[in-house]
Length: 356
Image (cartoon, rainbow, N blue to C red; front, side, top):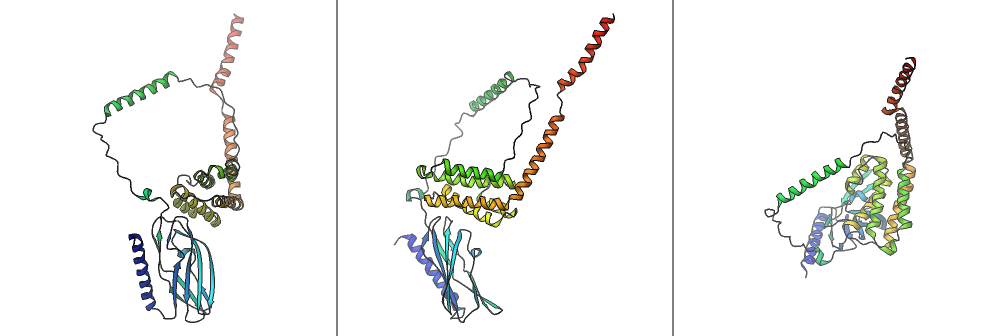
């Protein structure tokens, strides 16, 4: 037996023993048990988790855990409750795994409501064993490279070469420096760039000009999707989205009170993109276009939610442009002042000569 298989069997046995010990402290006829449809999971894998409840009597309602009961590495996709008998009930969760190591799901709380009384029971813990999608030869650590010998490096020659290059650069700048021209350049009008329009153009270009079925460059496809969404938040909400990690951006969106549906769609797109870019996950064409449809749904939602915010930003931009245009029109070059002052003096000198 492989060491990894032996370790998994030992852990599962310990969880089962702890579960039966836990049941010993509860009523014999009232219990719950959680199980998984797979023994181990990889990044992005979709699987089912079942939670079964054995009751001692009939209850008005059973409250099962929602997405908040699962760790952040496990995303809840859907759930379906099944009524087996009056004294037995169960629920099936369809989830997707985004972790990169073994994970233990803590015991889940189930609420039992009867009239105005509410009692709680807890399930056993569930271990999820991570299986990597990398080849065996890539999973091994590479040997360390030899330490670079700094003592034998010609530092003096390098510093002298850098000093010569810097001096040559400044000499070149002095010799090629041109006097500033006093000509007054016309004021150029730059129309307001609607962040939502920019996002729509980026998604349209990605769909119409990039043949994903031929290139199979999923990394470029997902990077363009995630960067387009990040650029939208950075431009409209003034959030440093392009330089933030996915986790940091999610905190910013919560702090700024962004629409919950838009936050959920953003999390889905960024998580899929991170899987492709950093976890070497290879999606299918259907997966890629499903993620693209999520971005289109994000645009439709943003068109409703952010309409007033975009309108205010446009009004502020146009007001700022009007102020800049008025300031530019009020500016008078110094050369024109000199000309206006010198012309009367020349006329007066001519009249004096004629009088003499």
